[in-house]
Structures are given as C-alpha cells and as structure tokens.
Length: 188
Length: 172
Image (cartoon, rainbow over all chains, first blue to last red; front, side, top):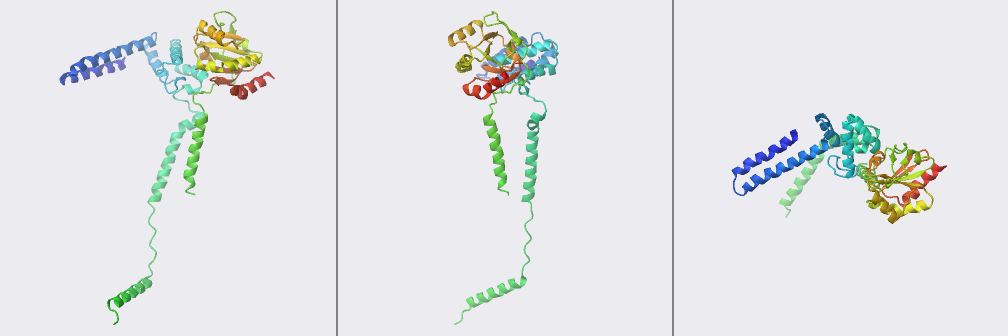
C-alpha cells in the first residue's frame, strides 16, 4: 500500500509544475496524472487479485518470496516478473502454501526439492557454490596483490651511479683540450 | 617467467569459456536424479481410466515422457519415440498442460508411442516432477528410481549415448 502512495505522489508534483509553465503543457497536466492514476489503479487491482486471501503479513512474505525465486523458463526473471505459465503456477503454489501456514524456508525447500538450488536467486553457501560466493572476493584479493606488486616495482629507486674514475676523466679532459687547442692554433 | 603470466591467464579464460560453451544454462540439473519418482496419481487422457500412479512404474525400467500438443520439441522427438516403441521400449506419456481433446487429436494424427497416456492438464504432477518445459523425459529404474532426465527432445544420439545404456543396465 505504501508503494502505491509513493507512486501516486509522483504525478501530483508533475502536475503543479506543468500548470505553471503554460503552453501545450495543459495537455500534459491532464494526461500524465490521468495515465499515472490509471496505471496505479491497474497495478493495485492486479496486486489485489494476486494476493486475495492473504493477510498483510502474508502479503509481504509473498512479495518477498516471489522476488527471490527464479523462473526456470525465462531464467533471468524472478517468478514475480515473469508471466510464463510456469511462473504463474509457482506464484500460485507460493500463495497456496502461505495460506496453509507454511514458513518461508518450507516453501523454498519445496521448490528446491523439485528444481534444485537454481530456483533461488540467493543460492545457499555450500561446497558446490563456494566459488560462486568466494569468487568475487578472490578476484578482488588478486587484483589488490597485483596492484601492490605493480606499485612497488614502479617505485624501485634508480640504481646508484657507478663510482667515477676521476683520473680517467681528467685524462680525457686534458686530451680534448689539447686537441681543441691544436685545432684553434694550427701549425703553419 | 614474466611472459608466462598472460599466457596462463589466457588459458584460464579459455578454459572458463570452453566450460561455458559446452554447458547449456537452460538445462537445469534435476535434484530428483537418484531419488524415487515423486508420488502422483493421474487420470488417463480423455478422463478415462486407466489411472496412472507410482506403482504402475515399478517392476521394469520405463521411460516417462512429458509432452503436449502445443509443444514443438515434442514433434521433433516424436519419430524417435515411435521407433523406440516399435523396438519394445515401454514409454509412459504424460500430457502436460493440455486439453483432453487436443492431446487425443495430436496422438491420433502423429501416432501413439505410449503404453499408457495420462493427463496432467493443470501441470500439478509436472510441478512435482520438476518439469519446467516440455518435452522432458525421465529414465526410471525397475524400483522406480529416477536415473536420468532429458530436458528437450530425445534424439537418436541422446537415446544411444545416455538413455539406452541406463535402460539396459536397469534391466539386469
């Protein structure tokens, strides 16, 4: 119910803004709230039809459950989102078991007994799902180690200069000077 | 040594890709393999007896095939099932989410490979068997244990490589 209210409050804000700015927005001022209102009503009616016979607490659990169960036909959708016949059946099944007073874990157990852990959008932590759960952290750890190693290696100090052989330098300097002097002052 | 790092990484990625390419994500492994077939009791197609229940599946290995008149994959596997029936393999048909009339008409038009055809018009038994699309075919041992589940059409290759050895093994 709260969700519907939030939804309704949105078009009202738009309406006041649209009225202020005149022009063709008069159309918007009428149509947008009308459209939004109708969709809200439709949603409300739809939601009501689905959860008829459930009390408020059960309804919350119903929405929680169907948003965490995978539809096996269209595998990237939850059974709340999908309208595949199987998803409709599974929603009905969830609802039926809620009215029978089953707990959330009993209901998910019912489904995993038939379809396996794949039906859960939040798979349990066990040996076969270890990589699934730990994988991202392992990747992160690997990346951190690599980054540290990379930063270290690039910060390595430049090798100390080799000691200079003063005598050799002096000798080379003298030779060059002598050569230059010879050039400047050629022998006649 | 350092040039080996990208090669090792690449091989790792290739191995992962290879694994992904050879596994069909649409084939959800059934948790029922190795477990007894779920309890069920269904009327025959057309609302007529014979009824079908777990006890009818025991005593010899059988195939349980979920099909429907609206299912395209069932048309694909149908000739294979007809051939198997001719060879004396016992196949139990369960018409899934269908109407009696459509199911009966479909069998009349394409032939009936089933020893018994049960009607699961609401899909309730299908839910218990973990069916999420048709066709799906189960290999059952003589004691009623599910040995194998084929998701999608049974092809000659699937029969030869996966199901036939299980059926033969279950007989002895």
